[in-house]
Length: 258
Ligand SMILES: [Zn+2]
Image (cartoon, rainbow, N blue to C red; front, side, top):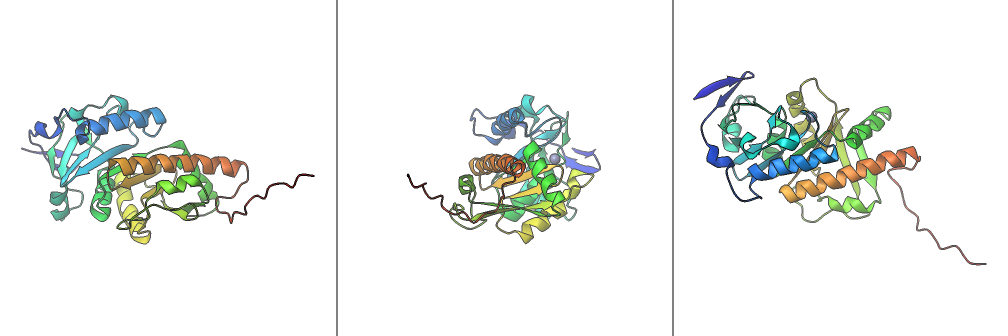
């Protein structure tokens, strides 16, 4: 059966088995549990934010318009990545499973960008206060990059797509910032451009909006998202104390006793 939704053609079939599993690590079970956790952190509120998981060709996506902390596996959309890539019209999406009560998330093409351009296994979008505040501080500085170094938590980030290992204590973490758009879907081309300009980044900040973070799998995406939120909060507090985000640290010498 074919149905029109929000101007997008959606193939609606009864593939409920795609979201039914007793395994807590199944994407259809993980997305609701992750969103409930993110809701308690203030990362997803109202209709904002969400998460998507890719398992081989199948992409699992939270719907729009559902309470994030009350989401159920039966609310999850499923689509085929190969079918999206083949489609000439980027906005036409072919859903293998489409719950009738909801609309697809406006974040869908942005999640797909992380899966197609970076082969990510999971992408998380938050509206975290700290992410938004960092973009406001950078706006005042007319900057399109968040840079921070010499902070232990930087080790929570991978060196980049196709590179092994994580950043070290003395490396600088760089996260690009893109400007917000009236419609979330319209961010896609700017997110993709930022991915091209910053081939090693695992995240993109969106001015006055939030952040998209991805990883090779759920564990890595979640670790990087948590590390980033920690760093954003720290950066805001550092700015309040007039401490620089980039510094050439000088070892603090012990005070000589008299
Ligand atoms: Zn958003």
